[in-house]
Image (tube, rainbow, N blue to C red; front, side, top):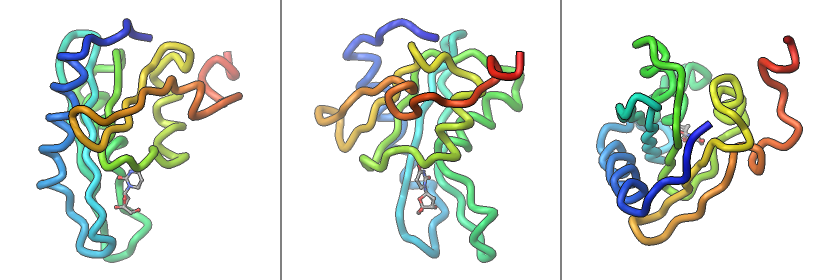
Length: 135
Ligand code: THU
């Protein structure tokens, strides 16, 4: 879980996510998605979507950010941000469910620095199945 972010931090994360749009590899959909994720240790992890000629190996921006962090030993996150106003897909919500407290993890859906909405993971994934269900 995380604490509520300050406006300045939200703007910084939106900025980081928007900058990721340049790196999206999207020759098939031409739909750019960028993400930025804040770890509890204060490090930002960014991600873009990466498509593939075989289509299904495509990785969403959100999962790119999460997997970059987890692959570096970081599993505790504060907040998330996604750009393009595309709500995260179901698979990405499930990945968030693995590492984040659905009650407190905040997801910012932003179109610009001053136009965004904030949701908890629980709002986007009600009755989600996670590690607690297997405990
Ligand atoms: N995409 C994301 O990166 N995140 C989402 O949550 C929605 C979908 C990407 C996958 C694909 O590259 C493109 O957007 C169109 O689906």
